[in-house]
Length: 110
Length: 117
Image 1 (tube, each protein chain N blue to C red):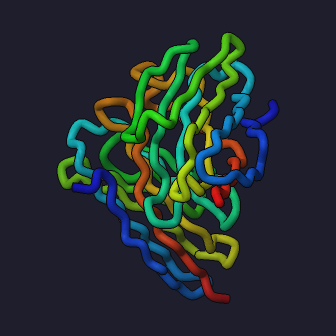
Image 2: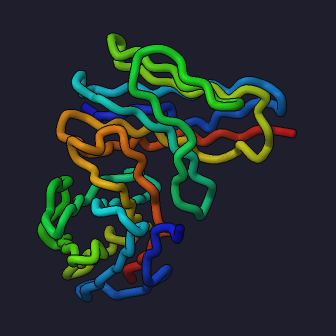
């Protein structure tokens, strides 16, 4: 059983639309959840972190966490072509290791 | 504050050789984690070091090893290289990691791209 799962995509949205990225995890005791963005040929950079159930907003980004359903999502409002990248969901579990999903490739079309 | 640095950035080796990669964490960060990234498997955790001790380990063969020095700089070594070891190797640092750092952000270096021929 994969520990952190994401739809591989590609997810294609028009400029200005909302992009919705989803992630599920298997470790029920997971404590911390992160979304990283990785441009082609670059290293991952953190865009959002969330630790409690509910929503957390930062600019155009909203992270949503539902621990009962073991589900975390990232919404990107007013998507821009510069948002085109691979989005990695990362979960810190009971062993404190950070486990990554394989990522979802997002393409925002002008 | 300078970011995480990794050297070398690119490396070409042949099967059977060994390789050593280096990582310098952000100043003040004591936890260093290593990851292997491939198109097929994504980002996979190799190991984490804190205060010169390996604190956590992923599911990689013993050919993959690492160490951390007193200044928090870390090296990883891969012996007897195989074609499948071709990957981007990423290093990430955080302040303390582990239990104390469960909410800490890990900051990634630019990576070392290794090609095994």
